[in-house]
Length: 376
Image (tube, rainbow, N blue to C red):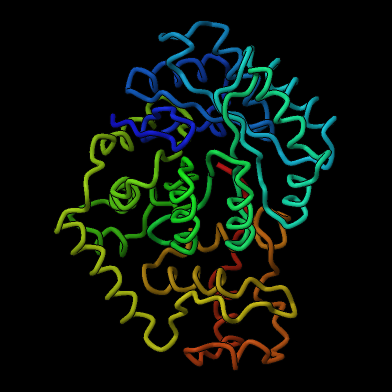
């Protein structure tokens, strides 16, 4: 296991963090998973108020006894933004009680996803007043935020200088948030990557085409290496349901060096194959097509289509596409069949794509499943 400085928090975190959304079979399973994770070198556990009974189960496991001193295990919980300080005070008290903890190493504002959420954070008597009180009395050591927001909201939140770390989506197959990584690093913030195995492409069950293109590496291994090779990134989330699911991901936990030539060759192969497979139908993710009058998240829909057509990542595409209209501000936007062919997007597309036709094709390819697992 390698360890990295978590930005200005000065915490030294393992490059993999234990997420707690999927291990909720029992307190005993939670305890065994935590024991195994710590034995393998993980020193950071992340939970959230919104993860069902995760805080309670983690608290129960802590009460059973940790194999290392509490001071050597860093614990984060996340609480949603609130419009007032009193609600946040109550939420923090409840989380500490459920976790059986006197203090949190890190508190994340969970799902700072909209401009309204950012207004709550910036308000003089808003939720951050309560958070800052708990920092002053020692019950919270460090404060950050997690986000599923647009890049513009993320950058604005980072620029408030309220936060010491950020949890966000960024993977080989989704590099839209590269400017957020850059700005966070410039402000010496810790960077925590959300669910690179699942949200990064369901890479634990890759398509046969993706397996072939990534050979001799696995798709999951390559995505981990893409992230671990970036020194601006501190830690990657992993959410095992059982202790056994820790083993495969952690095989790369000591490989945080720069990308090797063989790995770079595979990434170039992936890019070349995508360009060839998509041809003149490739969306390059410039986002110039937005806003859409029907509130379709055109770039994200077409990103999922890119992956389905080029790499046969249809299962992943259906999983994510199904979240449109089902996940609120966690995954905003309407499905592609809402397109009225108004043509507003067409003159803004630098590649002259027939966007309405591509949206129709994307809907037909990806409409098969409804979304689930909003976080993690």
